[in-house]
Length: 324
Ligand code: DP6
Image (cartoon, rainbow, N blue to C red; front, side, top):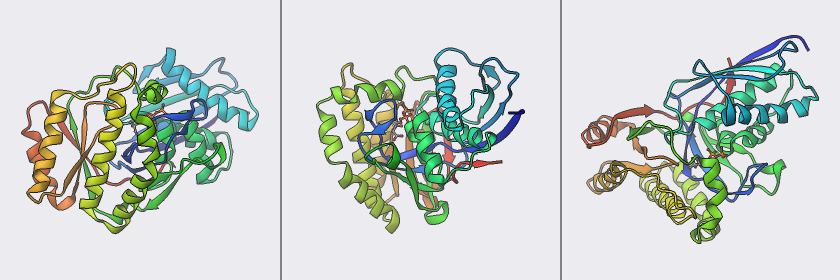
């Protein structure tokens, strides 16, 4: 194989209904299905070059040469893709993010979506969106939701074959905006991958999982009907349930900072006064506040005045992963 290069971009996504816990850690088969929205303004751009002259894989992230677990995770994923093609050629991966890594803005989602699309293309493989999503899932579960466009649903599935994400609405379906209140941009202590492994140690995980289909149905219905109040209620409930599991795992995981809870309470108060805003929080202290675009300036202004909020990033519904 002569040197083969491709560049892909992908956007991270924010989950309305969360993925937390795997039935199969290696295949990343989730305990429950999930729903999310891609974030257009946040981007990972990944260029990959396969060259027989390389003796090992190289991974540069934001211009810094990576080693240890970060490199190993990329190598493991490339090995899965090389296995499909039946080659052993090593690669140089160069990835750039335009947003802070490891602060609850799922960088692994856009990272593995972009890596998968770039690597598959550079190897000359043709794959359906479904198969790209299945493959991205192996690198990072939430990455499967960054492959299709707009608002996506990841089916729990029964096996590797039928656990993938599909688009349930295009980006222009609803002018929702995600205001990300950055409370801390430092790298989080316990990453999601470790969190998934201990999810089942919480007694509440079984209850959360048993009720997941109800939440997924409500969320999908609210999204398709553009019913903000219904969406607000279900995404806040789902986020609270996931954090209940996190806080009651062994060991317990506390991702919130004082400002996190300040924002959660403020958002609920705003909604009572008629402002269409709702919160959701991933495995980090930052809060994602959804609003309809008519309320954007008001919500941004209010968030910026809460002590502990360092910055507010704004993201609209985004497209799927693609070659550039
Ligand atoms: C809290 O997809 O980051 O953001 O599969 O180990 O890479 P890995 O985990 P990851 O988990 C995401 C967890 C979450 C909820 C969600 O995005 O659904």
